[in-house]
Length: 354
Image 1 (cartoon, rainbow, N blue to C red):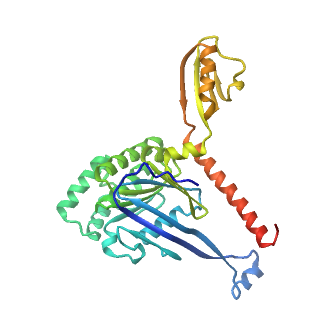
Image 2 (cartoon, rainbow, N blue to C red):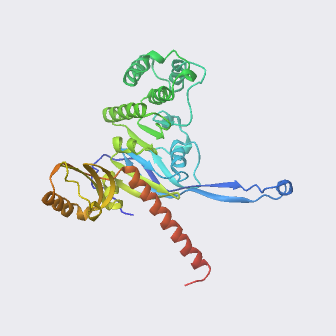
Image 3 (cartoon, one colour):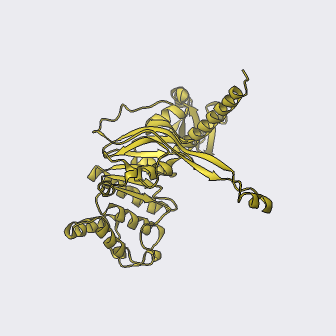
């Protein structure tokens, strides 16, 4: 797939991946008592390639969306970059450090937030966990107090610092997780689905905070999320990974241009002007007289609008890109189709078929 990188004019690369790969050897347990007993002496394993030869660079100050279906290798990649796990092969450097060497100098310059895992003590108030972070990262008291005051003010959680974490709502807990991750002012932030499970208001608040903080501090952020509103609100660059490999690396607009062959046209007709043959203009998505919504091929939009404006009285009209969720779903579907086809071709070659 193509790459659209011309829109970026940023400083040096701060994250560099070269042929990075990670495989796991997974035990295959057979069903039944006898099979389980046999498995004590003879075990069957399967090699799972979570990440396959990834090459990528992220420049300082970029906010990059790292997208892919479940099991694509997103979280594995973040764990590799955080030094949580070691690669099977390949190299990676983040701010000049090799992550899995786990150097203290590197640990103090990045943070990892995982939406489905907590780093705060569940039964203690968040402020106690923050004090622990202060000692771990050796933050000077004056700097700690200033940073904590700034973060809790931006996240609007000052009044919750003395409340046990288990008593906070999911949105409040995520705000506290972000505050904890940013207390030591990292240069790189890895976010693994930070808005998972949050309601619309909580998602919006997290998005607004991340947008402001990233622009103000110019930190580098790599974000994984299944909520396309996160991506649309925060990221200019999108990297799509599937089957352990990068399938697309470019601008968000480039995805719409490359993978969406249509636009959504919404028309507000004058009273009594709604056509009876809307399907002749495009695929009818919705009709709520006197309003109609059509899906029109990109190259036909101008012609369709000209026809409608000549023949009918229009009170309002809008032309929009299709929902990003729909486009990304189409991208994933195409990737799966291509992978299945390539797999069939490989199997045919292995079998000696033409």
